[in-house]
Structure formats: C-alpha cells, structure tokens
Image 1: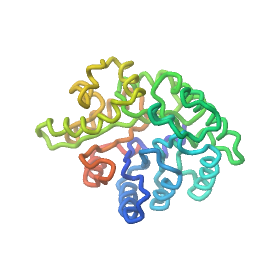
Image 2: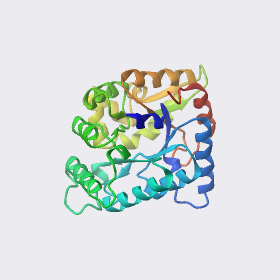
Image 3: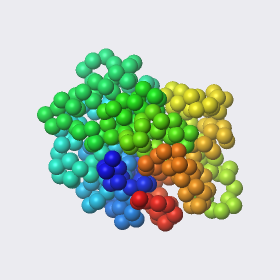
Image 4: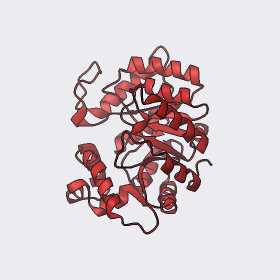
Amino acid sequence: MAYNAHLGRVGIWAAALRTEDTARRPQVEEAAAELEELGYRTLWIGGSPSPDMAHQLLAATSRATVGTSILSIWQHAAPEVAARHAQLTEEYGGRFLLGLGVSHAEAQSGHTLDHPLADRPYSAMRSYLDVLDNAPHPVPVEGRALAALGPKMLQLAAERSLGALPYLVTAAHTAEARDILGADPLLAPELKVILQRPGADRSAAYATARDYLSFYLALANYRNSLLRLGFAESDFADGGSDRLIDAVVAIGDAEAIRARVDEFFTAGADHVALQVVTPGIGTDLPREEWRTLADALPLSD
C-alpha cells in the first residue's frame, strides 16, 4: 500500500508521549518536533491515548504521522472517535493513524460499548469497526490499524483495516503474522530496546527489562501469545526468563539493535516501532537514545 511509505521503516513508540499534564506538555511537544527532524516518520503514543493527545503531537510536527498504539475500544466511544478522526484528518491532511485495540480482559470494566461484549473481544472489535464504518464521517480502512496478536484478530486487521500493530512479539511472530495477513496489509510490530555500550554487563539491562515486563507478563493475552510461540509458563516468572527477555527485548549497542530490527524486516515487517526502555519509562523522554538510533537505523525506504 502506498500509505505505508508515509510511516517510514522505523518509528518511535513511547508512553511518555502521552500527557495530560499542561506543565509537561512543552517538553513532549519539543521532543516530538526533534523526532521528526531526526527522520522518524511515525510517532506512536502508548497507553490508550485519546485523539486529543494525538492532536498535541500533530500540532507540534509538520510531516510525521502520529498513531495511537493503542486506543482502547473500552475507554473511547466509537461515534466520538469517528468524529474526532474526521476533524484531525481535515486539519492535518491524513497524518493521524487510529490504532485500535481490545486492551486486556483484566481491564475491561467500565467499557463504553452499548452491548455486553466484554468477554468477547473479537466480536467487540467487529462491532466497534461497524460503528466507525457507519458514522456520519466514517473512519476509512486506510486510516485505522488493529493491535492484533492471534490469528483471528490478525485476519480481521487484514480485512478491515490498514493492518496490524502487534505488541510484545518476536521476529517469529512477525513471520507468522505476515503469513496470515498476506502481502499487502501493514505489519508494524513494536520492539523494546535497551541501549548499552559495547561490552557492558547485561545484568542491569535484564533487571530493567524484568521490572517493565512484569506488568505485561501478568496479562493473559500476552502470556497466551507467547505460549503459542513456544515459551512455557516458567518463562513468565519473576519478570521473565533470560530466554524470553532475549526474544522480546533488543539489548546492546546501536549495531546490535540494527541487527535485531533487520530480523523483523526479514520476517516480513513493513515498519518497526521502537520503544526505548529505561528505568523511568512512562515519564522519561530518552532523547539521547533516540538520536543514537536515528544515526544507526534505516528510518526511510
């Protein structure tokens, strides 16, 4: 799809780009503008951001695509999302990409859908897409993508969106996802990164990774996805085994990170969304790391 070229080959995924703190907003906007100047064509906002949070980054940039990765369908009503998508598209020339997801079964209380589908996430997503399709200003297929891990959701992403945004996956998952999606849909996996100097002791990086992964490894959808990839329940203990961390986190210097990103491209990814993991993730804006990666990675075709 021609639209994929607008995303570039490597983007930045960061929950810290999501903010409702007016005092912090200038720092976030300045960081977004620098990311664009460094050559990153897509900025992914983590943590179920609202379209209004995407608006902040769109206003701070002039060329970059800004994507939600992901907006939870349980927290944002589809008619309101469709209306806001239309406004942002008109104002920013199609630079907004609506990434949608069903989030986690453990966090689905208080959802905004008008039918009881909290225990049927696939059906809930289909229903949500139906509303987007039938809104006064529909969200076009090429303007939305789905957070998809399993075969059914990947197939839905291929049929009814631009493609898939898998989170916490391996290159092997990317290869399987490409087989399910087919050749044309977008495949943009997220990859966690911890930059280290050459020859540095990996123990600190493993500790940082385990501290961050412990939250995700407690969630059934990620555990099930990793089990399908051949991991065992024992790999989830204490923030993850070395084997698991090595598979889902790229640790090393810029050259090592480049090699891991290339593995995902070889497996069939169109775009890789890099998340720099630091001890202060969620609030840190790791601009030095983003600069180092920009020098090492193929940001465009």
